[in-house]
Length: 186
Image 1 (cartoon, rainbow, N blue to C red):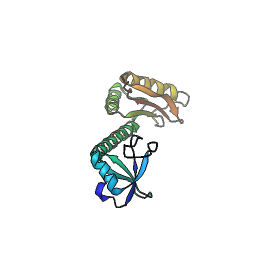
Image 2: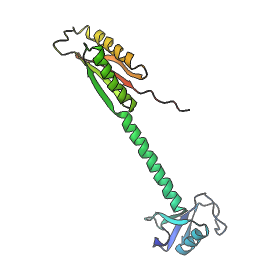
Image 3: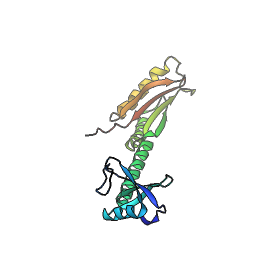
């Protein structure tokens, strides 16, 4: 940047695509200048001469306000980081396991936990495992029983969006996924 550029000649790239009055060729977007002339142009324009591509021959430089450039770059990085964190947050799936014979009080406690996860922006997967000996539900009736329990769960969590309908995953478990409602952009 500015005095740190060691090359004798630089290729000065114009941001706007126009050259100033000193340039003879008005159709090009770059010109080769001595480092002194490039620094003089930068000081006249109250800008910094920044080396964009030091390995080119001659090195490519651009006239920019370096402080504004750094500020914009930090702002863009911060926004990208924020979006990435939001994406990571929305990709988390919390699993709550319940039984097919769950009591209303126990179900209310499970849905309170689910509500807490949903308010944090996480998805919630409810799973009923049927392989316990006390279930004694035949393979043909497991889906019906699972859907009945999941309907009770849906009743407790009406303010959220159902992502995956209740269904059997293998012969021994029934699952359902709920996610927070996406906010509409106004």
